[in-house]
Image 1: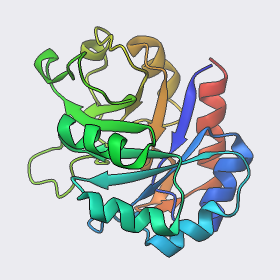
Image 2: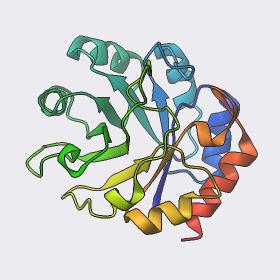
Image 3: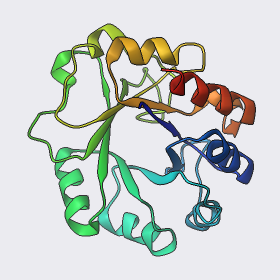
Image 4: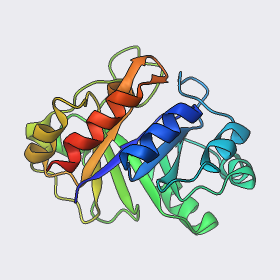
Length: 206
């Protein structure tokens, strides 16, 4: 079964909608430049709502101390990191949790090495010129390029996905699942419960 991650969850309404729809993961963004940013305590309160989804914390090139500070307040199931493979390895060693590496690709040369120790990958397009964030820019990846991506670890497709195109995207790329944020929002950082329901249903229909 294809997996679904609703990322950038920052309200009780969004969390409850993701849980009710049957999402596998909810993502909390610990990066202040994002309109979906949450504090440690906000994430803790949301995670306490329960309901089924695993919790994923998204970090951008964090220090080990920064991640430790978050984990003191909220016990995340998975760490998702924009950073070098060496950082991924350090996080796995330090915190004993699965770590996904997030990265943008524009050519086969950008694919991660089979030797990387990440437990999974979140793959999207490279950020556009002038972007203030390394990911979450709603830019559609090259699905034809990613159809040739066959890493030894599971991966989620991200970027420019919505309920209308996600099924075709997953069929074309062969990704294990989809990671969506802006594609289920009615405004930047504001999730829509019906859009979440439709997105999850579109993936489940596969």
